[in-house]
Amino acid sequence: MNELMLEPRHTAVVVIDLQKGIVMMPGTPHPTPTVVANCARLLAAARRAGAQPVLVHVGGAPDGADRLRQTADQPMRAATAPSPDWSDFLPELDRQPGDIVIFKRQWGAFYGTDLDLQLRRRGLATIVLCGIATEFGVESTARDAYERGYEQVFAGDAMTGRSAESHANAVERIFPRMGRVRRTEEIIAALQR
Image 1 (cartoon, rainbow, N blue to C red):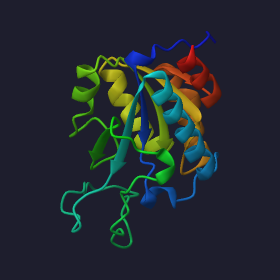
Image 2: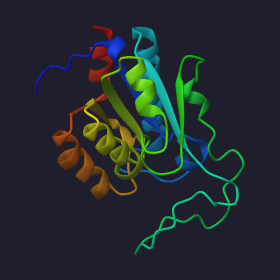
Image 3: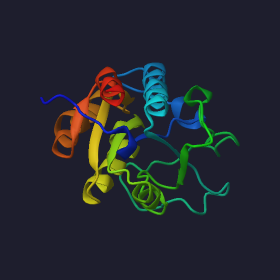
Image 4: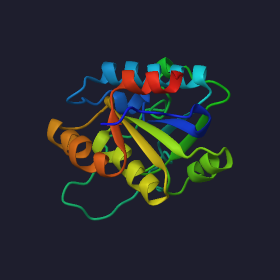
């Protein structure tokens, strides 16, 4: 593995779905509080270094009319309507006025949003990805970012999945083909160089 080098003014730290309704779900292999703490540390380091924080959250219309409804063997459907604060960011993220905020209605943060536009207009060519869930929101965003030509760094200990197997599949088999998988500490150190 090569030493990680990041140019903060061309880097965005993209945090996926750290919101009240999603962090209540159990995560594995990394406990959700650990993921939240590591993402908060990455955001703080990005702000200090001059990198761009990007906070992504998911939601939709109260009646669910804008949700995807494809036929699937294991559809992801909520048993009850989400609470009014379901999409609210966690206070630990310390949202700042200069943060880019992206609201999405599906797993990936690019489709149907202005994320690509916001990154390109700011000259941001590298994204650090973290958040919940590894195999859904993070992986979907990573695949889209790869196809758009972004350099990617994955904070493997700042994300967690619905199962240890699906998390491991993404972190060990998928992400290394699209970018570099590193630990939070190494990414913070690279932002501070």
